[in-house]
Length: 373
Image (cartoon, rainbow, N blue to C red; front, side):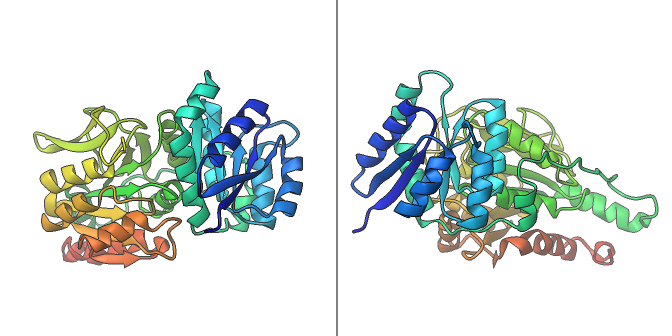
């Protein structure tokens, strides 16, 4: 069985040595080269033709984002970013994911040697996933905008003044009654962004569990808030869940929904990981099944593993409408595949059709006034 060939790119000699050691300990992979900067890496990639690159976010001479942009334009290949647990590191990592990086590993700010050794399993798991992931080359516009800040969002009012009163009241009733639940992992930051950007300002509330570590979800939510018509924020425990808003599970915490009188509220907790994850899609979807039932819509996006599949089946059994992303548009088809195999899914759709199909479904079940919109 051929080993996965990896090139490590990092300006720290210590990190290069540690990553090389971690990779070479695995029976199914080998580090074929370690580069101190992107210029050395460029020659290694040309000569060694690796399967996967691990790439430091911030380096001298040419930073990781510039290098990744050039790489994805000229020779797209699977990349796992190595990020620092800082606000700057989080923002740059999110840009890397936009440019086509498969995933990232967050290295600690201090105690790097011990920290990376503790992350050995995560690092090698993500290299394996990257080696098998489906590459989606970013658009020319995305590559051209590399490094640019998100554009300011124009947040429309929930209803324009000229909207007919009867239709507006139906829209309002729809957004108040329904909740949308999204689960995602590898490749999910961009997939979730595509769904949210397609939603109208008066969309029902969206509650999201994306597998991300602490320190990254706040920057992710802020970035999405600048791109979407709906408001996007990191969820806070006890806050009311409102239409026209999306709530993202904070890294390292589970997110679920609860009832407070007639209102839905967010629950953010630090209980044990579920399916090895915290946040876990299973926790979020199970709360949807138990408390929201037929007023829930479930969406399973790209990701490795089976987190959330059983709970999505519970959602469907409780009357929820459930959608899975199709294999062709997934970076990794694991989570949608498992949800489909569990009998949890009504529709399997390409990513670019999910938001529109979901809104059509919601309109078709909301009564005659809404179907005329």
